Image (cartoon, rainbow, N blue to C red; front, side, top):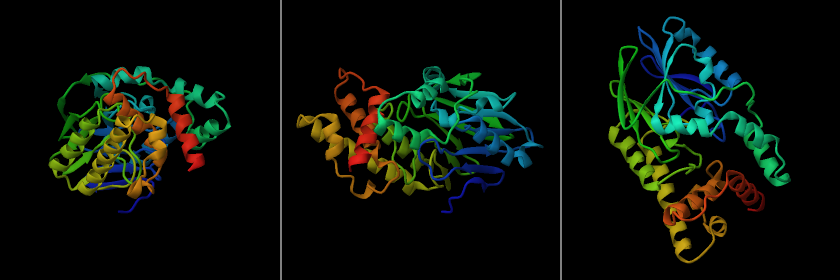
Length: 311
């Protein structure tokens, strides 16, 4: 499918906002327009990018203002622009709302300013250097829910389906049953490597199957081009493969960082940000052994930076 930056109508008055190349921070969003107001699905990683997106939507929102904003999860590339959507009701899952407070923009800004060594700093600059984390207020949803919530947005029904913890603690799908469209947040990375920040992986596999079972004609992923059921199957296949390969190495007594280096990615080696295998193996190890101390975020980025440099 075509993959160009900007607003694209995917059904009548339903739009996807796409940001190639879909790598670190380059997330997608959505807009559902109606006579009585519009629903925005996610904001972007910084204020400038979000302002650019909102301007591209202005032809629609000038007559159908955004009255509702749904954040699919707590990662900043899906919520750091919230403050620019003035007057809208902001909805997120209970778990995402709690996680937003733990992942403030100041934390990313501090990481970018710190000295973690040349290899790690170079990787961080390549991943997050295009973004400006200054002036961003920590998102605070005005309405939260757990499980399932049906809302009316511009005269349309939208089903908010919590499928986390998976990618993060409180991932949410936004399903428009009357339009055959679903916004998946980061449950789907298309042509890019998923990141298991939270898990368990089985929840993520179940979420992929849920997307497939909804049988939507248009699937808007959190990152990457528009897709269909095949995209959801590809993500599930990757996660199942990593879980099996990492589990075998755990049972053989291999350390997580060694396992990440040892796993042959095969058909997934060409996916964007393949080095995220470091995070994903660590997640499998934590799932198998809950007593295992959590690996710090900086150490995970250091592991990815070193793997990418030497492989």
